[in-house]
Each structure stands twice: as C-alpha cells, then as structure tokens.
Image 1 (tube, rainbow, N blue to C red):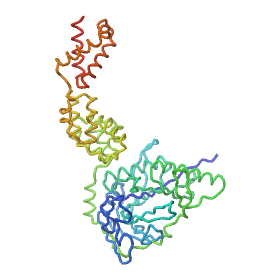
Image 2 (cartoon, rainbow, N blue to C red):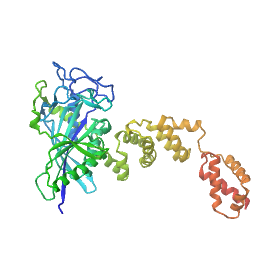
Image 3 (cartoon, rainbow, N blue to C red):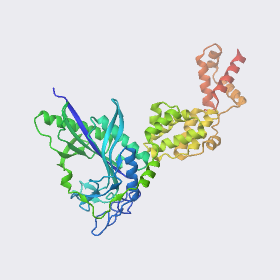
Image 4 (tube, rainbow, N blue to C red):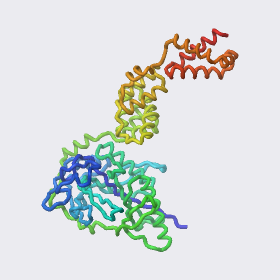
Length: 479
C-alpha cells in the first residue's frame, strides 16, 4: 500500500497594533460601526495619495529580527492588481520584489522533538475590507473599516509535515508577536489569519504534488481539521487516478469539508509593479541598531529565566509565560511577596482558574500585584486561613479590593484568643454528649469531628493548630 507525505507551507497575516492605518490617519480599532473608520485614502477615492505610517515599518523590523530574518534596508511597495468588492482601489499595496524581511527561521517543538521552520519572507501590506453576506436579504454588504489596516504577511517555506507542526509554528508566531507588542493576534477578531498551502506526495518522492490553498480558517482547531480533511481529499483523488487541481478552497468548519472558490493564481496573474505613489523605504543602520537594542524578552527567554532564576519546573514556567500580561503581574507579585514558588502555585491554582471559569481574555486581568502579595503574606503569617484567603482573592480578582482592609472589616482574621476557643469548645461538648463520650473512650475518629465543628463555629477564622491544642487540653482535663 502506498504511503503518503503531507507537505505544508503557510501564509500568515498579522494585523499590526498601530493606532492608525498604514497609509492614512483612520483608526484601526476593532468593532466600530460599518464604514466609520474610513477616509478617501482607504476607500480608494480618485486623487487620494498614501503616506506611510513609520510605526508599521518599525513593527515589521521587530518581527523580522525576532524571526532571525535578514533585513532589506532598501525596500519598496508594489501594487497587486485584482478586482473584488472588498478591494476599493482594485489593487492592494503590498511588497513582492523587495520585501522588508527575508530568509528567516523559527524553532518549534512537537512530540517528535525540535525543528526549524524556514521563513521565505515577511512583507508589509494593507488589509482589504470585509464582505458581509446577508442571507435573509439575499445580498452582500461591504465594510471598509478594515481596509488599509496594516499587515505583515509571513510566508513560510513548505517545511511542515503535519497539523501538529503547523499549530506549533502558529503558536510560536503568536507568542512572538504578542511579546513584541506588535499585534494581539486574536484569531476570533481576524488579527491573525492563516492560509494553508498543502500538497501530498508518495513517501520518498522529491517532487512536490499539486498544492491547494485553504482559506476561512479562524481557529487552531479549524486549521488542524482542515489539514486532515484536505490531506484525505487529495489522497483519495490520487488513488482514484484523478488530478488534484491547483485552486483556492474555502473550509466550512461546521460541515468539516471544503469547496472550491477559484483557481489558484500565481504572482504573474496579479501584474505586480512598483507603486508610483510611494517612495522606496531606506532603513538606516542607526535605526536598525536602535530597534535591535530595544527588542524585548520573548516567551522562550522568559520561560528559561523562570526555570533558572525562580527554580520553577519547566511545566510551570511554560504555563506562567503563556500570557505576557499575566506573567508581568506574576513577576511583580513575586518581587513584592519575595517567594516566587508560592506565588507561582497561587497563580496556577487560583488566578488561571478564575480566568478560565470566567472565560476571560488574560489581557483583561487587572488586579494590583501588591494586593495579592499582601494576601499571600497574611496566609503565611497565619493571619487568615487558606480557605478564607481564596474567597477574599475572588474579590481582589473582580474588584481589586485591598485584602488587608477587607479581612479586618469582615472579621476574617484568624482567632488566637484562647478564652474564645475554650468557651466555644465547651459549648460544643455540651451540645454533643454522645460524641464526647466516644472521644473520651478512645475513639480517634471523633477527634476530627470536633475540630471540624470548631472551624465551622468560628467560620474558618480559628488557627487549626490552636484549635487542636485547646481540644487536647480539654481532653486531658476530663480523663
């Protein structure tokens, strides 16, 4: 039986987190009313001229350097000509001949080990608008708010061989962009999108098979399903002796199947030529040096630092660095509290649990690190029970209250008053003569019953050690 190998390359579009568009001053904010973030430039009006946003170039440089790319210090923009309702100019301003970044690589890790994925190029371009298909009215509407939003397109070499490798590569790029601060990479909002170019060939064959391009992939799970579905479709065609057609296909995740959209174009079909309205971009050595010097710590580097500096297990370090924002709150809390290991345990146990339970974006977590540090200090000093501390932390997480004041005002501080402990214990003995007789008769299991009743009576505010000491003293008196 023939064995087949999947060959996959990706085109990843990343929306850059600039406040304004690539060639005009319109807002890039997500979610505005249709066609409210527009002007003559981004709607392609005759006579309007583009002006390049400098921060787009800087963000592209940061991304390229992080992906080990070479930099074209002289680059330019080209016009990619195609006719579609969401493309108001009837061309897209992109880069073909001299992209800003090229010949890079990133390293991924899968169950099979580490692997380098080569990056052919990384170029700047403008996004198109968005078509909204209204099935009720049987029409299509166009929203140009996204038109002109700055993108970098990251084109990989066909180095991936499985869905697992593809997801690892996308995760790597997502973390990289988020840590660099160049994009939030939210797939659900379209700020990170991937087109999958896939072909199959017999194992041992050097030549590539005919590739197809898969679009409409808005989650990692959808991407994995689309890869498996297209692989099976192409193998079935080959086994039946039918040709695989080079085309662009649209993935329907609900039906878990794809359908042809159009024939797959080559670069020559777009009739690229240098954009006459934009001058070439010259990146000085001083500017490039300044960008390199300002590169932040990335996820892998931060993870290794947590392992070496905080002595955390690799699993914990990986979990704590999955969100740059949360990792910064963790670090500040650990610095104030002074115990990174205990802080990490609390983050993984309580912070991440609440983020998950509430279905929150980790970037929206905004409690003050000092408040959590103060709460952890109170637990360590046995000023509040661990059980009550968890309840108080929910208030810290939701409302960022001061836990010290809240514990004091709500009477949650641990009771150390021996007189109160003794009087509460005597009241329990009087109310439970049967269990008391069993306890004095040597039945050890009843001991836990009285400890539990004491903690309940004092609403978790008693020090367990002090409760046991008071109980031991009363038992000794009565024997």
